[in-house]
Length: 106
Image (cartoon, helix red, strand yellow):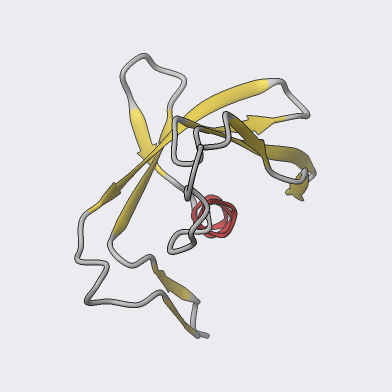
């Protein structure tokens, strides 16, 4: 049985841990949804940035979540609506975006 692999165009996505100054790699579902919500490659910041954008509420494993994006590109947070836990998300370009494309391999 094969598993899906997501190539994120050279993005490293980290999620804040419960421990101070600790981060973990975003889970597959977090990365996929975050990339969708961020709309990388769009012209969303033409003109004045939006001070706050909140994604639609979505569910995963029985919990409700919402992304919070400040100034179009960050800082960014994932809010667990069910538990009231808010974690910062950072993303880092570790590749050449002009050279590679987002793709999904099944």
